[in-house]
Length: 496
Image 1 (cartoon, rainbow, N blue to C red):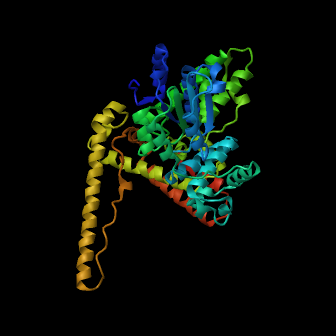
Image 2 (image 1 turned 60 degrees about the vertical axis):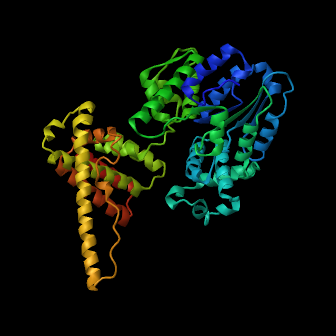
Image 3 (image 1 turned 45 degrees about the horizontal axis):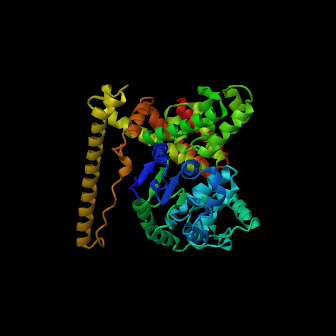
């Protein structure tokens, strides 16, 4: 078999398939493909691969999609080792497989289950939830309310409103859905791949989560092709750009299929309503394309008439709005976070943390000999001149903390020898929260923080701390509505 590239990005899939399609040789395809990442993208990638690998007319007999969990995995191995009914290529696909899941993925699976439930996708929510139970060797009885947080090893805040969990359990019981058994199926698949399949037979595995340290991953990379359909979910500038590019690609593909266009304001409104949720984003665009009928362009009025906001706002949207002193946005995100059942004290803590960061940056600027040159600096100048100064400032701070802790350690040791105290105090971890740039390799958030700090004076930041202190006392000691307390604090900080 000719050597194939072992791993390609989703965007490179089209060229890979185009090259193989030109050869029109089944031998050009790998015996095994692993497609992982975003669910919508890996399903599209699977369909694109099948289009080239197998004509639609032959799929009814020579293509076997199988749910990639439990006993189905062994069935998939047996079928990919069986000759096709019709001459030619045969494909067995282990779809939505859990073969790479591990106990370490429990938190990720909980998040995915909650997101699917929020999108009214009970089928996928149940699939993720059942996989959690299988990994942790739990039954439905183990999740009685009094045992729930302990069984799932989650803090109470993570399950503060667990009605969704009750609904998913009911869904699983009503539909007699089994809890998958965790076994050594990954090892069996790896052995089957190494042994080889009959000529013309191919195995495709699709999954959302993978572990590159697993031997199965390494075997597939050695013997086949891996297609990476993942999109970074972080908040770094590069992550956001990757998310925006993926949404733009999906937008263009869907609008081309429906022969529609969308104005920029309407597109931004769709993104604001869905966030980075590819499945919901695609469904919403298709819904809008159908709604406008014979009309060519989708407008912002269409978006507001048809769609409901499903985006789950991260708390940093609120803290950024407070930093920008944007009252309207801050109150909007406050309402959104409270509607998502985020605890008021968690919201308050996030605002306090952001104001503390502003104070740290403001202190650096005021101590800097060239503070006047920081105002209005562009990103290029910031990276070249200001960021190194911030890193030096952080290093000096850590050195000072180390010196203080060393003095405390020596004093404690001396006191212990004199007999007034027993034992030397163990050296504590450095207070890294006082650093401005915890991750110097990602300077953009620090650049934004510097810009935001210019909207406040030091006196205003100190006044904000006092305002938040009073809000904290009221939340903990009065029966007043948390929303009103937080709204008042935000108004005072932003309009001071």
